[in-house]
Length: 309
Image 1 (cartoon, rainbow, N blue to C red):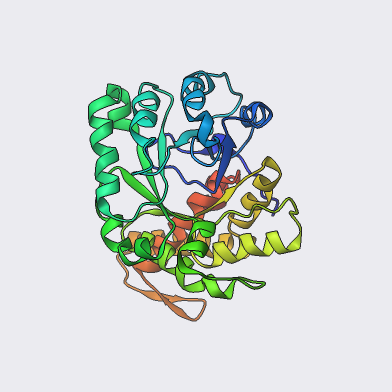
Image 2: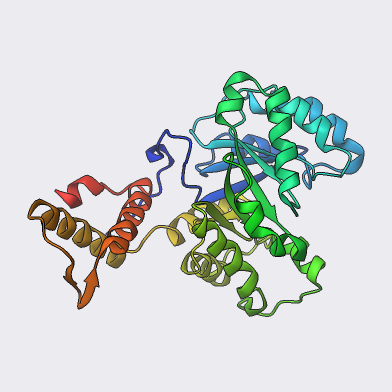
């Protein structure tokens, strides 16, 4: 079964699956130009790491023009502001929230619910009426303290719909060093993914800043998918299709999901209870799993309706 990534299949509701989050430094015109035609699910214009300290004001002066540029895809549009307490976050938000183009705000270095509450208050004060209704938040989990407070962070606002694991600041915060395969990060990554699932949020796995996109990167993407993440961060457009392929269910999972849905539809019509499916008891959790698999499959360009017919 050939799976073709397709962002145009994304649903129009406020909750969209973000398989790929592409960072775009707003100080780099070439990257900005490429972002306008990228098929990534979410374009994240970066006002934090993507702007040198002495150019923060210049970046703010340019961000609205960047957001208004015509683009050929319907990727979600987001902005990563500077972290709360950096001294730049207030002016960042005052400017960015003037735009009706912003759909997502990425809040870096979130360590407590108060960071999210601050941004929500700024949205209520400065966002357009459309923005107040539409803007979703991503909380970047980057420190040991954030890991300890992650449960409270995950529940603190209806605007928050995604937790993101930010690896490099986490390594610094916890004085962790990594080896091939990243076994030292299993706990942290699993905690972010598990907490997101527990509270009905999406989860985005760590970024890889290497310019090499070989087998090790492919395996890293697949590992994140196996750990339950719903997407991954990217720093260049060459990583997007690799991420899409890793975060699309394989043909075996799709076939099992289709079989599960059909089985449940048949038993519902006949008012039957649980039955065996592939030598396992198939109940409501299987049905919910199958629905999630087929939603991701549909977004990846597969004609799911024909499979269910």
